[in-house]
Length: 435
Ligand SMILES: Nc1nc2c(ncn2[C@@H]2O[C@H](COP(=O)(O)OP(=O)(O)OP(=O)(O)O)[C@@H](O)[C@H]2O)c(=O)[nH]1
Ligand SMILES: [Mg+2]
Image (tube, rainbow, N blue to C red; front, side, top):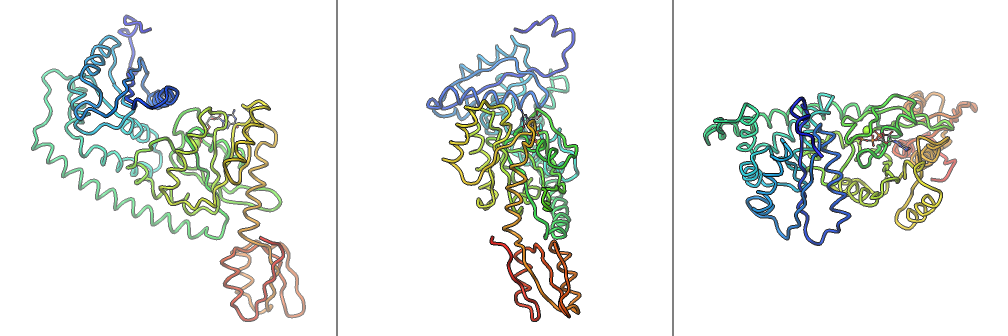
């Protein structure tokens, strides 16, 4: 499989061995699926997978997760394959990481560390960089001993020894200070965000959420004719981008593309991305984009729902979008429609490769807007300039006429504004359509 002589000539790419240690009852198919995903993650991080090792375990070994025999086996496999990295699908405790790295004598990472690494490579905005750095420091803090070993390994290895306990203590204090600083800076960024959000409170907002690589950025691009960063890679998007989108029939919305979710998204990351993800919590509607061409889409939906629950997202706002349906045969599409109707509430089907493939999305969002901001006829005095300004500012005026000393507007107005108007003397509100 590997040609060592070629490798010796030139190969700057890290060579990785993947290790899965699933419980005995996990079905084979699922074990493979997890390792395939780990391979994609490893590839995204920039390393090449040269082998996979699986050991089923009832309970993890406290020192090495896998058994001693397996550890020894991986050690010789690593030297045989010339691997420079071992990636575990399971989360390793600080002790397990250190012991494994000592025994295998090659750098060891777990899934969380790998995802953090990808995020740090991909973060673009100042906010995303701060968020990833915070999550990385929190991950590193209890694992300083191993991190130091990484460094000494990179520095040439032989003779290089890890720092003494005292050094680690000092580092830990420095990290704590840094964490406090980062938190403060992130709080400031979050406040700015709040201000921006308040400024657009009266526009209808939609957040695109979904498993990584589901097609969220492609959909935003298709809806807005705007260039988005689309890539057949995991976590192409880390920074949320918001676009004003014309939905047709005079409706528009602000649509935000967000970071993709994944099974077991490290919780430090969810915590530090909380500010970004507030866009999700506060959106008027959530379009949950599902890659319907993935054979495990149902499990991806579950993983996304777990993160959404974690964020306390009201489920009534979620619309499921079965995407990439151009990849399905007619029979598959029919089966999907049936399954979707059995399982879920409101849903649509979409594709960016089919003519009018995004029409269903536009339609369902128009419906949501109609019920969130009903069309009303509102009557008030011509002298009430404040009301007129408010109608234009907070709502969408469809028609305006004057009857004597009264102004009559037909407008789409958010419910909260209508509530205010109803209590006002001299303002009459009449509903034109049902919610
Ligand atoms: N066949 C097909 N492929 C699609 C469709 N929409 C997107 N893709 C492809 O799916 C891959 C991922 O698309 P993205 O839009 O980057 O997905 P994303 O959900 O933004 O991914 P992350 O930002 O990584 O979370 C790309 O290779 C797209 O070209 C579609 O409707 N049909
Ligand atoms: Mg994206």
